[in-house]
Length: 353
Image (cartoon, rainbow, N blue to C red; front, side, top):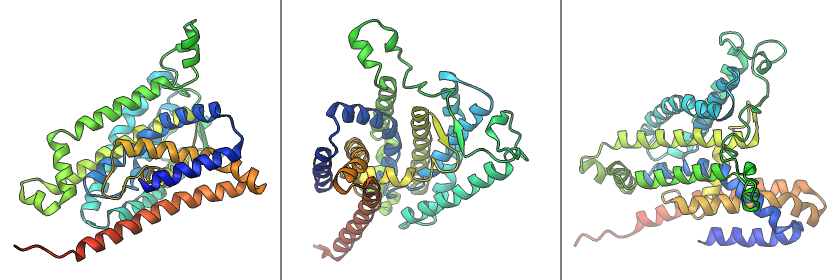
């Protein structure tokens, strides 16, 4: 737990330099836990299956955004619109996950860098489709989505039609009681939805398929000898990860209320991986506990670092540089430690007695 402890100390020290009230930070952290946890959770299944940190969840985020673009194009709003976005995004996520899984099976041992490059490649295809084909080859009914030329989607898509539709699914604000009025400030429905997803994933990992994934993660050769279809199991793990990432991106963006068409998905993999590692996870070990701890600590640092930088150095940009440094730094250190531990284990003497 050395990494979470170090981050906790950084957060406590930074908090004292911000001068922010504790109530404000608590409110912000509840909101950020609700909207970011599913994205971080999507990394757990590939880690357990021995595929490392799946930077390819960017493709899941893209699938989620495709669902949001389609419901916005057809003016589907409210809870129905959110539900339809989830339904529409799921087949895309399954297709993307299957293709990524097939490729990663050809790159065993190099899954992380391969998934990262696949994310960059998918981003290029995504931009080609929605910047060149949308409005020309792909008919767009909602003309407000298009650029002034009539071809290509705008940089920003307004999600006002579904903004907060999950967050406000339980109408506490309409109950004339003090406690419920207080609850209306928080995305309780989103937290409950996230809790359900966590419970489903926890239950799934205890099933036969979930145990097969653990076996594959521990030793692919032994798992194959035991009769487990290793390649199929790994593909399913990536598909599930991509689906969770798609749903997580939809939950995230409905809370924000706007979508940066060509950038909202770009940093998803980086920040989710950094959050998981901050929680104490490693390249080959992760659970829901690391998801919660890491999401809390990483986003706590995100909130306080600009203001702490402003108060300490009279420059808020220093805080921005610091949190980007932390995001990349924690991933680099984790990969370095993983390589070091693997090298040590390879050098251990084998007992042939």
